[in-house]
Length: 109
Image (cartoon, rainbow, N blue to C red; front, side, top):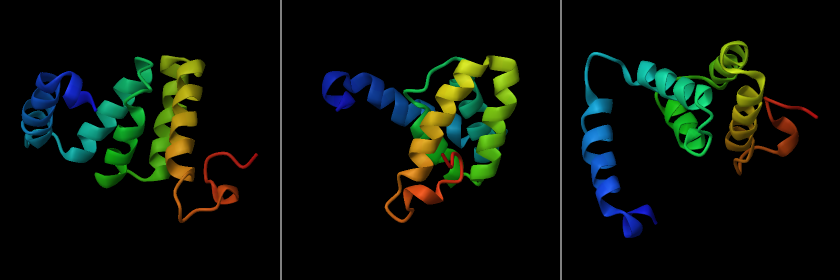
């Protein structure tokens, strides 16, 4: 676990990032998720993307909207970054126990 290696980063993440930044009223959680997902894609930081795709869905962003964000960013951030993001999204959306692989809404082949 990260907390075993670096407890301070976990403390700051919990208390400042999620306890303060994400709780501010100036941006809705939905808008915060759109900004965060977009930033992770444009910067190529797919390591954290899966977590934030799930958080985006919890904050009311649909799978179709997430796919459209990735498609839109392909033309601004670059095709390789979008393709890396869609692979993470496909893995998060399609690898759920309730879904058969052939029912994946992102890639059918």
